[in-house]
Image 1 (cartoon, rainbow, N blue to C red):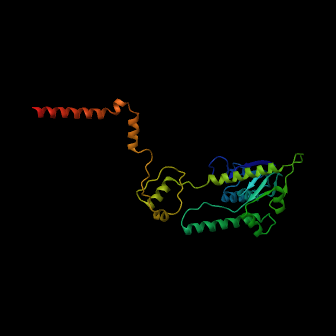
Image 2: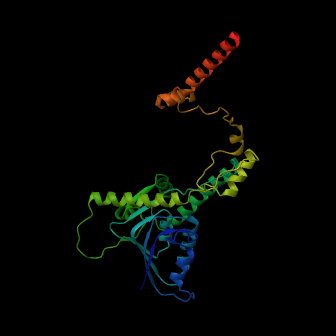
Length: 294
């Protein structure tokens, strides 16, 4: 039986180099010339990703002519559980984790467009439930509630709920996983799931930011910072009053600086201007007195 290892996020395209894409899975499974049909064992460790890509992978695995066994070794979270469901036989190692939750999307637009996004999410959840029900023995409403609650399951719980067929045992003796290790593994898996969501948060391009700026104020120019996110629609932003109040002056008043500067200057320079004025005034008085005497 041929062995394959799938380790990474599930996505439609390769962006960061750590993704599993439908194309890469197809090539690994079928071969470059699409001629392979032998039995395959896949070791899967994935923290989820794109639901659309996972469904494509599910269909590809189900269409494969050979037998496909999948063992979750690490974590199968979110979209990765959809891919895992395609296995003819699905196992988890004792220390692995299984996570299901509601699909999510980042939406932008008006009320109608946002409602369309909600309907898309509802349809996506129903399609995932269809996949789960091929294997899981729980009723649809219970599984839907588990998704809404974001449920993390260990191998034993996943087996009890019917998500997997068995727990993979290697037959080797070893110390059981303690509570601290389980907590650390769970925290790490949650962080990896969040990391995928964070990397796919929207980044407004300069063209889109300029389009928004033109709707608010045609002459506005936005900076090049690609991390800027604009909240609200154009009407909301246009109705906000502009802050025309000049900033409060800061620092030391000029008059005080002049006084302090005067105290720091040498006495000859500090009073030089005054002395020269006094000298000029004295000379004027002498000339005036001389004229009167003449």
